[in-house]
Length: 251
Length: 332
Image 1 (cartoon, each protein chain N blue to C red):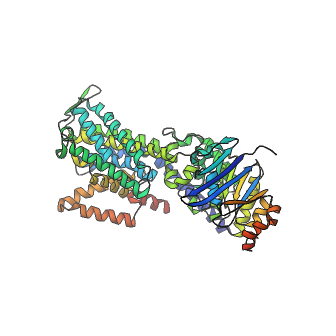
Image 2: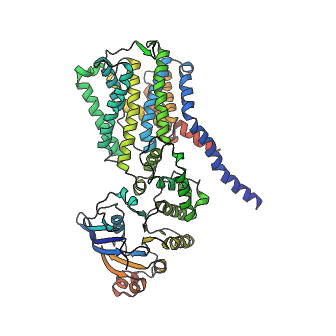
Image 3: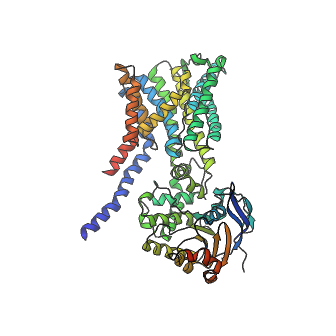
């Protein structure tokens, strides 16, 4: 077993009196795909927000590559090597597809430079186009992002995350709101990404998760109730009771 | 089949073609602006109007950096305009600074004030941000009103008339309106060039990203708060420069310079011309002041007319004069 890329120890988050997440401990090895599932309100989004610095945990520690990163400001995370997508599409709507990804690439090059012309950094254009090609959006590079179809906007968001060349990619329901065809494209993209990256994934579409992930974590009422490979999770009676059995649509 | 291929080709060529003339316009925006500013005193009904368009246009340009490009609606930018004006006047009258040193001095004071106001106000968002900037600007206003011995209170700041300046060894009569206009214009032109550089820089891309989607900008690795404070300070610096030019122009600083009406006028000019565009603020200032000039000829209640036009713009042409023209040209 190789050293974990990410390790969380006993992390939790409270909002006032409400416990959104409590006592979650898990370690994630490099180059594996882990899915996080659970009914609505199980704490999946909170878990993701803690892992991406959107929220600071109210308890526990987060280690990335052995280093304690608990409480690091959110904008530092992508520089550490952790990038994410959001459950609700989160792009720069009025910018072109290319500019969306270019500005993400620029964060590693120039953040406060008020003087040099933007065009001088032509390597950013190449990086942005490479990320767009990887998600199949290169043909739409000049389009204003808000005019893209929903599935393409989701793909754009993944390109924005990818251009950072993250070691850990957090994807919050990448196929949310997609039809079957768009979902199929996205799954193909995720399979490609999963080949050489560490991916954490929140998803509802069970069939997709079973095919894609090496490991599944199940959250329920803010607690981790199961952790194992897909086959193990499918047969776990506790999981079946709280999640799988509830709605045949998921299974 | 051929027809549909053809139309696809047209669609593909469309945005590229539009980008072509837009890029050319953007590349020439500073020389073009300077050309128009040079002509202004000769095409407008009065030279007094030209100098007002120059100064208020520059304030609006500075404000647009924050409002149009970073997406932050400040209601207190009169504070930086006024601080620049008061500091320049006090620098000349009290500290005995020469006029050319009073300009950077005014910018320093106005910029420092903007930095502090920025630090305090960016903790809030939306309407709360607007209210904090408004409240802090009112604080500056009442300070100027109360500190009578320094600022002249209600009477405004006086006693720093610059009648004659030396320009590279040449004496220039600063009471001659047209000569004064071109001296002040040189500073405004430099500021326009500076703003154009900032907008075209990597930081310009960052503030636009923040305007578009703050959450995403943060996730992309940008320190949103720090970037906002920088944008706020740069914006305040440009407005403070306009204030120093205003002081040099009028040779007094009316207390009104710091008032909430001035802040409101800056917002109106920017919106009228088109927030988030390079030429918009100047066009807005021109339209606003022209309307004031013309309407004031037949009624003292010119604000009613200008206000109505403003409301109509906000309701029906929210992109302003220039933004609408651009969209119309692009849509053809």
